[in-house]
Length: 294
Figure 1 (tube, rainbow, N blue to C red):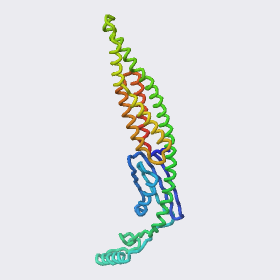
Figure 2 (figure 1 turned 90 degrees about the horizontal axis):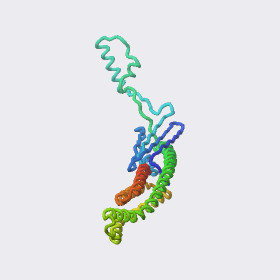
Figure 3 (figure 1 turned 180 degrees about the horizontal axis):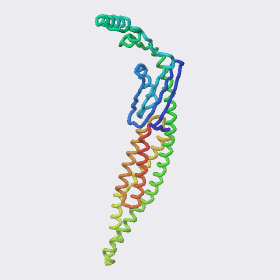
Figure 4 (figure 1 turned 180 degrees about the vertical axis):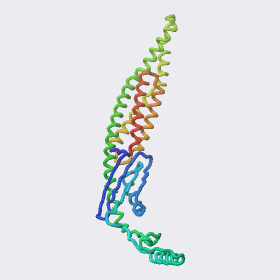
């Protein structure tokens, strides 16, 4: 079954030291475009995150947000930079003695000086952290796929309904198309009769020749056959899809629109023209829906 390109998935994981939350939002896009936002210190896991998501998504723009919250007391080590502290103390004492300044050089003063105390991040186990990140990523992807599949089922129902409606309209056109040459011959006969006012016998053979020429010009049998074939192909793709078939459906919609335009230009009949306008309106609705199919 077809899948929508629009969806949302969320995954969470905790190992006692940190909480990892992943959210994935997808929207329509011509290709597969994945944007990942995550803490820079864990960027070593980004490629695997992308590969995991790309393994499930072939089309669509995916915005991936990864939040890591450390729940231990600290993930950094504070270290004293003794050489820098010594220089501060030495220079402050010299300044005090040289200018005969009052006051004590306190611990709080030294601790506030730049570079005296340094924060050194604890070394992460990259393999362990990658697993911590990929676990909720896979959860989020599964939830995303469920939502995209559910939306795809709704799209499929709508598309199949519109396909049946178009087939019904095509059947009505086929019935009407058979009458077009006869109606043209009658109009031609009546028009000639009005012009000649009964003074001359109407040349029936000539009328039939003109009607045949007209029938050939406005013959839409091939176009209707191709349009029905496109509808059958679309229904097959929708009901039997096992992958990303959005591009196939997009191509079929273009072909359906082309046949509809040809039929509309060839059919010299107001009722057929009206039916074709309804078909084109349904094709346009199908086109809009297909833009959201993976």
